[in-house]
Length: 469
Ligand code: SAH
Image 1: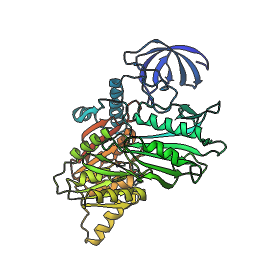
Image 2 (image 1 turned 60 degrees about the vertical axis):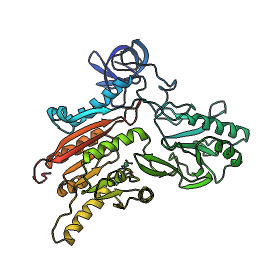
Image 3 (image 1 turned 30 degrees about the horizontal axis):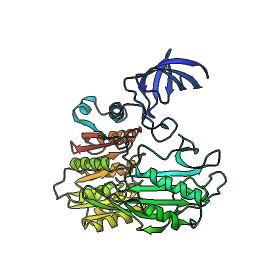
Image 4 (image 1 turned 90 degrees about the vertical axis):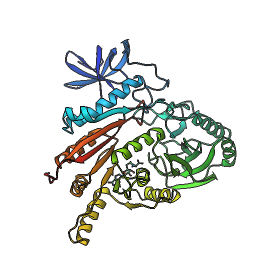
């Protein structure tokens, strides 16, 4: 196989990035936008010794799992990877990915998985689920102002005001912004030259409150004629917060540190279950509130709380899981590395009148081991006790020092919420060696049309064995 060869390929598998995988004379090809079951014509763009990458040229026989993408930009945009795959097939792909990782990396026996894994939690309506959108603002080749999305792995903007993952009001807001900028001659920011004013627009929508937040990220201290823009936006139903975010740095980090309120409040509110959250432009908040509630309900049920338990919620963010659990626990300790998130967590506890929580700022792998060590020193060798430990780490998973302390503390149950089933599997392997067994597990589809999948598992200790690591 050589570059530019045109080949006919039967797509037999799906790669981790959602691409189709097929073989030609034993040579493996990865083909973006090809769907499992398709027979395609593809052009080789990169040929390595044992495998290569090819570009989809023609779909000769479409797969039964192939659907027409709802968004005309689906292939060019970096946001969705598997919009052309039927939703049912997307769910099966995600379930198999989690299961495969737990088996191969986690070394969990197949019989265990077959008996404990529950079916994936999908969405009834797998579009328009995102409560947050960040659109870059720029100019196209002809010099017209555009908003849109970055093409996959690049920083060139594909014009689009109607992303099918976002809420419908986004489009109206984007059109108001573009018309305003045109009328008043306001420039868009250009990454190469670091000139121009408007960099991004952030829109957040409270699904249960219908409150809308708009924040303009600008390369300057003010937005000229903002009164006129505010007047037009404030007329929209539900508009609650309009802010300016100052970001004058030459960086691809979207938000700056300074927020100025132009109109209304500096935050919006929303609910997950019966807990109210205040969300400011810089706050972290889960982007799919419908599935988040299901995920937390699952974590709560796996935690098996009766009201008497001591619970740790590690990597707690703005305290979402902590507050959810606190309603049914004696005491919850949350740990999070970002100080601003802990400020939000404390505020959220206060507005909900929840008092049995305590939050710590720091690394989970430092805070918990230190707590454990100090407790033993202070209490004459008695060990710190936790009934349930919940972890929800970023993609890289948990540090071994943390897993070791968790195992030493011997909680009855460990609930692991994961956004990367490969690192989840690695950590499950460690905990199984420490005498914990996988008792329950379920994937939740938080990001339909993309390859991401969340997983919740519960481990419980089967024996009193000490960790042999
Ligand atoms: N449980 C929260 C957030 C989970 S996202 C929720 O459901 O909303 C993971 C969080 O871990 C992020 O808030 C991130 O800032 C935090 N984090 C990353 N590394 C960390 C570490 N070493 N110790 C503690 N928190 C960390």
